[in-house]
Length: 411
Ligand SMILES: Cc1ncc(COP(=O)(O)O)c(C=O)c1O
Image 1 (cartoon, rainbow, N blue to C red):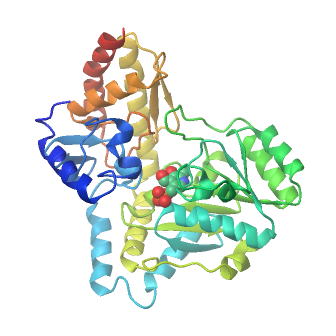
Image 2: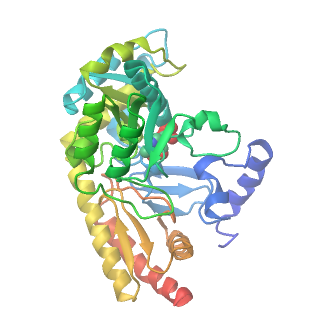
């Protein structure tokens, strides 16, 4: 990738590497995607586009890994946040807007009898486990292999600095394996506090997997029978499949559901909703954070959820996602390449037949990026309500050149 094109990004990264571990850490580290596989720093963003510090423009199919559901710098959301910030943001007490937002969410999501707020998704997944353990007075948690629920030691998403004891009460199944789930429920009967799953499986470096027929129905049935708290981690998919929660999209009812990402169009906020049975445990368990009551992100969330509903944004995103999916499939076929587009239309991902080492994905993403389209090589993508038909058409036209290059290199 051209050093000239990313001159400022590289200079900035060298400065960052001296004062920040890894220069950029976590999932945004260039170490994961490879050097200069993507720009390192953003300068500005608007709608479905952003510009890196070298001034290169991109159509954004990652939406900040999910949060930008209405597009970057949405004027109405920003106005609502600004208005609240000018009144009061982080003070000794929550603002009225916290109650307004909780009321709005309990109206939107039928199973939600109460709501609590935090900042990041992991605040909510961690808290959900504690509530489940308080409610059941049991220890074990069932989760899926390869599922991402944050970076806490129990999640298994990291290795270094983590003790076997941190995961001592975590039991795992392959995502969608109802028989495996039922076997664990029987083997550890009387000791299981909760089960935490994403609404469908969206691992990195792999195709996305929709729930097998009967999976959610079966899990719900077993949880109810065995007194296991069913926790839905809707952090990634929430508000892109159904405003009433992704469980409504898949037709089941969890006991707790966790949200973040799209809830406030980029303002820092997460939320957990729960049913009536869990209200007392949600009150008993102590939890708080320095910024968890800040009012401006809550005002942004009220605006975001209201606009999502008003503008039928979920339908729109999924329609644009369908256009992208069909366009990419047709274009790949025209170049004699076989791709799989998996996941819901608004959260798609592609893999190449014969590209199991992901080098084809990496070339696809790098060549798209050169041409101003930001696709990720090994993480699912996100559509926003700001993506228009012309943006999708432009991206598919670019894919024509990119698939040609992938075919030339890989044959
Ligand atoms: C499904 C899921 N759960 C939990 C998290 C953790 O959220 P956060 O990074 O905001 O702590 C993420 C973040 O990507 C996620 O996708």
